[in-house]
Image (cartoon, rainbow, N blue to C red; front, top):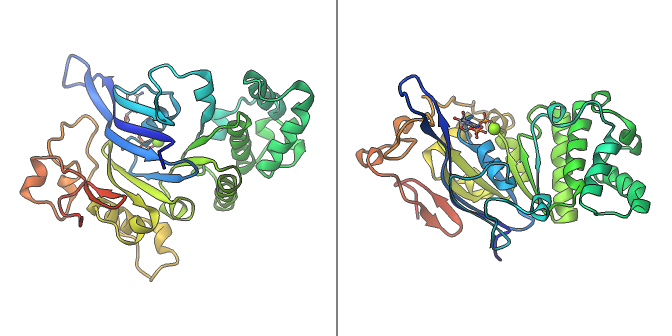
Length: 318
Ligand SMILES: Nc1ncnc2c1ncn2[C@@H]1O[C@H](COP(=O)(O)OP(=O)(O)OP(=O)(O)O)[C@@H](O)[C@H]1O
Ligand SMILES: [Mg+2]
């Protein structure tokens, strides 16, 4: 099966000013990421704050132009300016539904405008299209007449998902879409995403700090560190037989995986992540890695592959 979305050696550099230099320097937010997401797959993306997850999400939906590398959709290079049709097909759901919804507008008018803009439904079918959208995200039809501030956090996030679904996308990129919600609202939204995937065949890229949620929702996981994918594979394998020392450290540090586990306690990950301004010659995780050898600081590790699993570490088992 060919991938629906493919990223090929994507780099995103931001020019930033620092105190140390008079000219702007390049901050490597994403530093050579290749990924392929198959149709109807759910790919989880994890990694510490600042490792480039949201920047990568921006590249996937076309909000951020890569400095280098290619994005392919259904085998076609998408180029720098995406067509309206392609923008419709890849939608984003953000962390903060309050900031991403206009507080003054009723839900009905926001959704109707989007549907109109893409000519997806004849005028006579609008009411039923809006009702079925509410149905899809398990909200009562009366929510259509509400303004965002009259809704709970979980309801607002479901409205944000309805807004993304209104244009009938193939792909939903959810960037920390449940992080701001309480545990029960999180469960509702996560179950909704799982159902939508099963019912509509939606492809989902789910970015989260929460490994417990990634484990329940995703079938593949990409682990990012310092703008790179350090390990990627089937969720089952990543969670039970992680190869990269960073992935193993993340798993040991995850409270959600320890709550019901064997009684082991989460262990904090020591050291600071590499700064995006640092020039990295070897493995970016080397300064914090308990297994680092001399070679790790001199050359970036190539991927060690085993089936569809890959790990950027010299110690990984092939
Ligand atoms: N527009 C921008 N201009 C300059 N630097 C940026 C910009 N956007 C992101 N960065 C920097 O790029 C790096 C990656 O940021 P990004 O937001 O992608 O990380 P993240 O993994 O999503 O983090 P978090 O988990 O906190 O959301 C960070 O060092 C960030 O400060
Ligand atoms: Mg982010």
